Length: 337
Image (cartoon, rainbow, N blue to C red; front, side, top):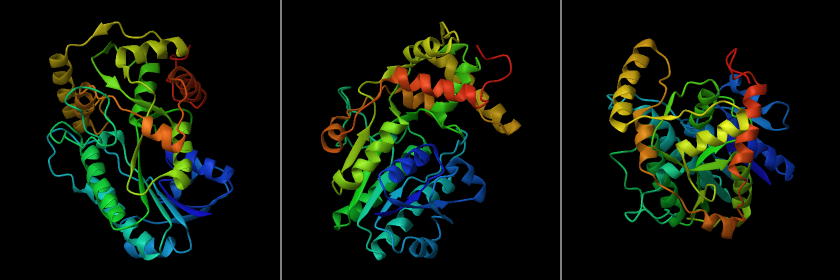
């Protein structure tokens, strides 16, 4: 089958492309910039360069393909005081609408949209959220999460009209090959570089990037149109526990001091102001901390039953990730163990 992959040069995208090629599929990838080609290495794919906001280009590039994996999205930090953030909605919502329109015009047989668990709501009783829990965190969520919710609505609208679209909701991805890195990967790198003197109350759901890639491949044949599938490990982890595992696999001491929430938020608000002024990345965004404090856990049983989704132990995945970061120069001089 000939498949079209957006976001193919990203963390999950590269893992998925490798799986697709191993399964014998022809792969055409959309790349936003020639500078992004390095992550695809010598993989035998057909490359095209373009922008998902260009509807005419998307109609042209998706001709002759049978399935689309839409992974491309904009994940961008916005300071807490910035209210107008049209770019992330233009890309994540508008780009998805364009790709759906192109797919419908070219009669694509399968459209798989990669969303996020950030677009899943929280149950009032605190039990694990499944795919049926509607998003209810508008005031506490990031613009990224909100944009994913709105993009999902467009996908589901098409599915209700008979279009064969499936949604996958991965948790925070970890593993080898996180070049950029992602926010979770950055947290691991910061831990290895001893940028975390304290920990705080937070619950994080994780997914091995290769497990998620396999689930995407399975969704090509087994995913049911109009359905969502949560991809996460069998349990969530408190940040303190996660740091303890990182200590075990890396040898870097985990922080012992717990930061009170009011102090932490006050510090992060100030850090965002200073970081914005200095044009650098803040240690953490206040939105990220607030999302993690929601303590949402997720239920992956639907993906397990319908897609055959299986999970790799988090210790195994973190060990691979740590080794990859060490071997690829992400540790500052003097930080290596």
